[in-house]
Amino acid sequence: MSDLPKSVCITEEGPREGFQIEKGPIPTARKIELIDALSRTGLDHIQIASFVNPKLVPGMADADQVVQGIAPRPGVAYTALWLNEKGFERALKHANRLALAGTIQLCTSEKFLKRNQNRTMEQQLSGQHAIVALYEAHGVPVKRGSVMAAFGCNFEGDIAVERVVAIVEKILDVAKEHSVTLQYVSLADTMAWATPLAVKRVVGALRERWPDLEIALHLHDTRGMAIANACAGLEMGVTRFDASVAGLGGCPFAGHAGAAGNVCTEDLVFMCREMGIETGIDLDALIECAQLAEVVVGHPLPGSVMKGGTLEKFRA
Amino acid sequence: MSDLPKSVCITEEGPREGFQIEKGPIPTARKIELIDALSRTGLDHIQIASFVNPKLVPGMADADQVVQGIAPRPGVAYTALWLNEKGFERALKHANRLALAGTIQLCTSEKFLKRNQNRTMEQQLSGQHAIVALYEAHGVPVKRGSVMAAFGCNFEGDIAVERVVAIVEKILDVAKEHSVTLQYVSLADTMAWATPLAVKRVVGALRERWPDLEIALHLHDTRGMAIANACAGLEMGVTRFDASVAGLGGCPFAGHAGAAGNVCTEDLVFMCREMGIETGIDLDALIECAQLAEVVVGHPLPGSVMKGGTLEKFRA
Image 1 (cartoon, rainbow over the protein chains, first blue to last red):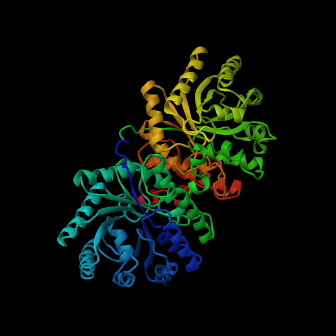
Image 2: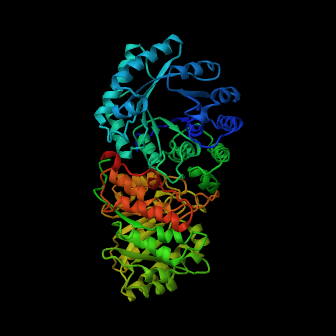
Image 3: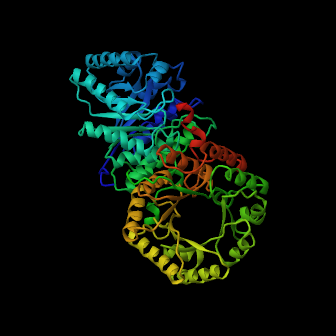
């Protein structure tokens, strides 16, 4: 484990991942309460909303009110998600409180693209050129590359490592063409196909090709592998992770094969802390947020450390 | 990950871990139903009962009936747990259906021993000599060493790696004195202190000292680390794991800091299969057992793959 990083950067995605999928309506004030509590834990990146069609995602219908309702905390970057130009324009109206940044996003799976966005790979690629131009026109920096379905796809099956390398190359080409320097490229395990071995193989292949490329991981926990996959990432020196407080973001207890949320933030922070990796996050305060999240959504959430507790009291 | 083993041996502990901790009474017939279903999955080691004081552990009051009620399947070793001579004598009555084997068990933590068994380390050690003699007198083979609290203790805090090495040495000394050759030594993360880094350090230290010693892991999931810890074990070449179907064995949804069960069997089997490690277990049949386990205990259980499903159908 000699490659374990000294510190990591965690982006909290619970509010966005969670509120968009919860079935019951959640009062806007409670969403804001959770976001404000999260902002007091030391988390410095929190994704708080997505600007999407409220008819398709009713849980995000109050995205504007949420963004305007929070008490912005200095040092915290509040981010949002959008899927098209219309969503981006909604986000632009909150440029005073959101840390707006563009992403160049491609997908490894032609079938997934077709099904979800009715696009071919080529259309997706040209769309990225267009959106980067749009970001440039609005003075919004482009910081991130993102690979969807980096480890496997429900519609296309296993994804070869070479395909991921090729997609990252395309992302870097788009960036280069627009004279953009990406801060990092994120690998999304969109449909929860990753295992620790796969994480090591894919990250290893990217490292071999681009030794200085910073890599981030976005890991869903549908098959219980997220914390092990995060650990595999840490062992490969990955220093950026998306995570979801209490494991918000899916319906793991619904009894159907529903997708689960991202790796649980407080479980990830616990693991990092116990392995000597700095996160800058107050774990006790984060656990209180996880417990608050259960109250806010009104049902149990899958996080473990929020139930099992930390080890500090036993060391005292 | 060059040290990943080609195959692993998994001992299913769900029936014992689970039924001893569940609050509500579970009909004996349903316990038997689950055990018989587990025996048809390819699992070849199933721990089905513990012979303990029924006043203290009412869930095990029907241990004799459970053992006599199952339909023993050829090739499956049904095992049981006992904590003292009285329990062992109860187990002996089932020598026709149980695979009886003795364990030399020591604990890293003096305070835990004092609290749980009102014994000192020295008393524990001499007790092991006595019980090995008892096993010998009854012709019961002694196959296993076991280290309790191998990664940390709620009463003593962190446990130094050197302490674990010293405890394993004592176990091997007891075995040697009785001319017993242990098959393996199991490291129990009794109070869920382990992290992947700790697993690698402890297993690595034991490997360095005894290169040919087979090591097993017994990992509780109270803090959500069990699957990552199991993966760390696999990467160190560990080939024996205890596991618990559906994650039976704790009350993770009770809202208190209760201990969780062992690493979830089907999640572990899924991880192994996806990483090319043979388990000999039919994952689909095991998932059906996990779903049955939820019905038997009457509440949701924490396993993930039982909800998220396998990847096979997407590969077809």
